[in-house]
Amino acid sequence: MTTFTDYLWFETQKRQEFIRITDEVAAIVKQSGVTDGIVLVSAMHITACVYVNDWESGLMHDFQVWLEKLAPSSLDYRHHQTGEDNADAHLKRTLMGHQVILPITDGTLDLGPWEQVFYAEFDGQRKKRVVVKVMGEP
Amino acid sequence: MTTFTDYLWFETQKRQEFIRITDEVAAIVKQSGVTDGIVLVSAMHITACVYVNDWESGLMHDFQVWLEKLAPSSLDYRHHQTGEDNADAHLKRTLMGHQVILPITDGTLDLGPWEQVFYAEFDGQRKKRVVVKVMGEP
Amino acid sequence: MTTFTDYLWFETQKRQEFIRITDEVAAIVKQSGVTDGIVLVSAMHITACVYVNDWESGLMHDFQVWLEKLAPSSLDYRHHQTGEDNADAHLKRTLMGHQVILPITDGTLDLGPWEQVFYAEFDGQRKKRVVVKVMGEP
Image 1 (cartoon, chains in turn purple, green, red):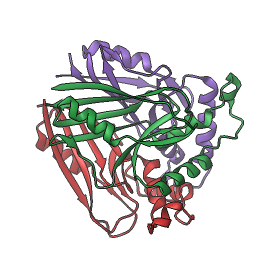
Image 2 (cartoon, helix red, strand yellow; image 1 turned 45 degrees about the horizontal axis):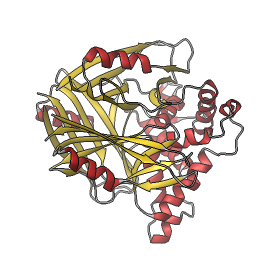
Image 3 (cartoon, each protein chain N blue to C red; image 1 turned 135 degrees about the vertical axis):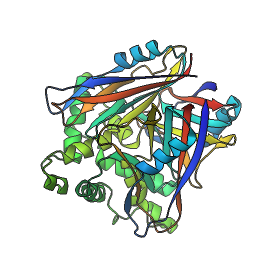
């Protein structure tokens, strides 16, 4: 069995940003030499997420509107008594999920026709990391 | 280490449908010969989900009512400007999660007493796939 | 490859309770001898969850208020026709997610600076289990 670990770094311009990372993950899988196995892609910061969905700008806008409705930024959260102002980012990342496992088959990511991997930032403008851990047969 | 990959195909009669797949996943695990490890069960389409919860028809109805409330089908989504009409299905699948990892111990799925695996379809009536990837010790 | 399986048991005093389990998971990883790989931490009961987020009491309170708003306990759920009264617990656990995969690198949990692992109980006051499955290179 082979294991291989790498990290993706992000520092978004805006507080909230959605970034496609399918190609970056695929490159790490290729570098790992694993041809059959899995790759874990997991946000290491608790106001960011990693998810799989459609690469369509309208839907990405819909996600942002929807998350703001279900986890509004404007509420009087108790977390803010610590001086923080990002409780909604913790909730939004929970709705989206913070990690995915992608299967690797025949040396490539075994994804459906529309599956794309995204990093979603809900409290950005500072350096953050995603861990990418590949495991499987060389 | 052994790896083994198979796929489950679905073409639901209704647009939205919940299908128990615990036995199908268990059969693939048995076929793999893996006795200790994990199995990834992951929807390959972005308007479907795989989740673990109760096999009780009342609760499965409650899930549908609840998802429609949190991610209504009737809204004027920007995604629909592309000609699509399924933005709510993308959101519903996000709430439910699109994949699970099940542990395999002593040759069988290591599940709690009420854990059942489901495929949930939110934009069906066409062919869709779930990947099942087993990894572990024979 | 090494695999190692252990279980954490919980019997909460209150119906709803959030318990940090990072140290318990780290201890199992150490005991496994795995230095590079992954650990699956998964609730075996369908009204409980395992999630990664902030260890801050205000935010943990915010999570509870938010979950009650999105999945209220007071509704007339069809699941309750079976005699159960915990449909909301099934929904709350779905929002939070019931499992996480943590990467192991250089013999320790490869977590970001604020990542903590939690068990969240939504229908407690009885014995429940979490499975912890470690896989990787010794």
